Structure formats: structure tokens, C-alpha cells
Image (cartoon, rainbow, N blue to C red; front, side, top):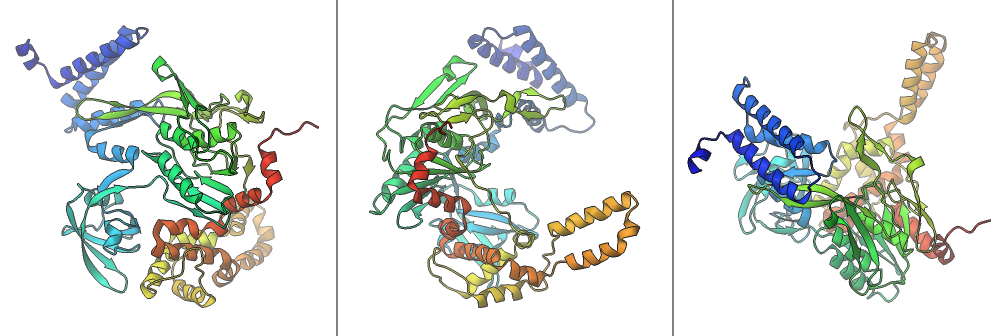
Length: 558
């Protein structure tokens, strides 16, 4: 037997291992067509062999296999993924929120990479690396032309190891920083605190290990404020994570032994009901959950179950619509995969999955569940809710968009750069909640951007360009050319005038960015409360007790 295996080619090993894997699968799923699977595995191994043997150029066998696996899984859904041994660390971070490194977010700045956000309490911040610092080299190797992924790999490493970094700081030149890497844990709750004397705020950014404990601890701390009488739980932009942590979070506000979510899959072992296991921290305090289009998966379990159980009011925008559950499967050679194994259902019985991956169009695209197929469900009190497209908020907030001027200033990094210079000139500022720039400082900003490239086209200008194009196509333009020129001249934006017109908006952006230089992630929230339309709407709902209570009851029939 040993001599036989020595004679096998690599592709025959692939086929044997695949067949063994298939037989294991067959043992638990005896309805699978053995012939079809074995035939296609043989075809796959044959194609792999022929390409490796006869393709005109050398083939990277591992890279080719990875591409084949990725494309195969992409035909299922975006959440079923394969992770090679080299990608294991990134996958671990997704699941745990932990990695070894210096604790800083990075971004591009010309040909180099710069620090955009050092995490408070970690090596980068402790060694006074600041937002805006340009990373020139790492361990003597130039970073010019490298992308963020390249630099991230160089900065990460085993806790306790050192890394030598040369940075360039505006006004100070080149500086050398030697940092000792440590275990970085990105908190699920990056911020919690009081918005005003009566309303607490908990920002939930992810669902890795201990997310439930972090929300619980945050609420316990907020309750130490004697005036607390309402709480906002913010899951906007939260892509989800561990299912059991969503149950733990709901358990903070919902009593013991209440079903939060159930799952159903093709294999019976995935048919499960998840209930709250512990006494709640507070089942009565008025609660608002903030959502948007980027609130997905576990975020939707939390917002959907809070809504189904009439425990709180959902405010903001409809959520993403991901009602699928993934499980991690360990594979050979330290590889692993994340595979969709079930759909989940909120307490009312609805599945909020928006896209039907089981029925693809001829071009491979996936369609949303049509309104005609969406089903009605009832919350605990009898309110109507629907499946097939995310969680609809109880109060929809229409958000105002940034002006074209603001979009340009942000994309050109001019607001970021001004905040960097402000930090160099001012050692400290008042708290993020209290910080405001003066009219003189706004004038300084106007001088700073004078002559810099931040051109933009207003919506009116774009519409006029389209009008001219259409008029020319229809041969009408010559007749209206003079009127067009007059209108075009009048519409040409005056940058200085636009700065005055949008002063309030630009000032708010400057204040938030500057506050982050001193108070890090905490400032993102404290500086934005007064301008956050969802937060302000939540405060209005809390202030009107009758409205809050009516939102949790069925609409009375007339």
C-alpha cells in the first residue's frame, strides 16, 4: 500500500482527498447523488492536471486552486468564504476583534501611508503617533508606493516584539518611533456616555466575543447617573458577527427565557431556538435602537427582536437585509471556511433576508424578494411587520446630504489636514462636547484652503450640462445658446460664497475632526451628537412619552 501511494501524482492526491471528504459528507447526507459528485470531482481534478501540465506559462498551483474555490463559493452567496492558512490571522480578527500590532488605523496620502486614527491606550498613541503622521519606512524599508494592506502586514506581529518606524510630521520633520507591539482588542462598544442629563448612549460597533458583556457593563455604568431615564443603542454601520452575542445583547433589555432568534437549515442540527439565559439589567427604561442601511446580520437580530417584542422603538433607516447564518468549518492544512448553514428568524417568525441567492437571473445577478411575496407578521402587541427586506424602522429619518463643497473638502483631505495643523498649534482643547471653533479660526481655514485644489460641480451645474447635451442632440441648442450662456455664467459657483453659505456644515465637520485629534474615538460621538439627525429624533421621541408609547402599539382602526 505504501509503495502504491508513492507512485501517485499530486492531482491524484487531490482527487483521493476530495473523494474521502465526499464520503464523509455522504455519511451524514445519504440523499446526495454519489455519481454526480464523484464524476464532477474527477472532471475538476482532470482540468487541474491538464492546466498544470500543458499551460504555456508556469502555474502557481495554490493560487489557481484558491481562485477556483473562491469562484465556486461566489456562486452561492457573498458570505460563504474560504480562508487560506495565510489569511487565518485576518479571519481570527474578524471573529475575535483581536490582533497583535501597534493599534492604529491607516490610510493613503499621496505615495505614502499615513496614520488616520491611533487607538487610545495602545502603542501608537502611547508613543505619540498622531493622525496625519506619514509613515516613511518600517524597519529601514521604504513604504513609498505600498498600499494599506502591505503596511498593515508589516505593522502587525506577535505581542512583545518591537517595530521601528520612521514618520514625517508637518512642522517637525522626520521622527523615529520604536513601538512594542501588544495584543490589540477592538472594543465592541467603543463609546458609551450621557448625551444630556437624562439620556444615555451606547455605541455598538461589532459582535465579537464579549459584545453582550460590554453592552451590559455600559448600561450598568449609565444607570449610576441618577437622572437617567432613557437609552439609545446605536447599531448603525454595524455589519454583525457572532449570533450568540446578539442574544446576549437583547438579554440586557429582555427577561430570561424569551426566544430572541431561531435558525433553520438543511441539516437538522442547525434547527435551533436561542433564548435569553440571564436576568435582564433593565426591562422598563425607554429604549431606542438606531439603524441604517449598513446595519446587518446580528444588528438586525437585535433591532428586529427588540421591535418584535415591543421593547423599544427603532429609528433611522431600513437595515441591510441579511438573514443568513454562517458557521466556521476547519479544513486541512490549517485552512478553514465560513459557510452559510441556516436562515434566522426573529421572534415574530419573519426572516429579513433581502436577496434570494437560491434563484439567480441568467446573467448571474441576484434579485430582491418582490413586495408581492413579502409576508405580514405581528409583534407581541399586534403591530404589523414584514419579512424579506431588512428591518423597517418605526420612525424613518430623512437625512440631509453633504453639500458638493463639503464632499470635495473631505475627499481632498483638506478638513483632515487642517485638523492636523490645528493639533500642532494647540496642546489642548476643552471637551469634545464643548469644543467650538471661532470665526477667526474659520477664517484661518479659508486661508488654508485658498489656492488648493477642491473644485466641484453643483447639482444645478450638472443639470445644465445634461440640458445642453440633450438640446444639442435634438438640434435646439443654437436657438437657445445666448440664454444658456447667461444661465451658465450665473450658475458658476463662487467658492468663497459657497464657504459662507455652507459655513455651519463646514464648521461642524472641522469641530469633529479637530476633537478626534485630542480625544480619539470618543470624540467621534461626543462632537457629533448635536448634529446627528437620528440622535436628535430619538431625543424628541423620548421627550414625548405619549408618542413613544403609541409607537409600540398597533395602529388603531378607524
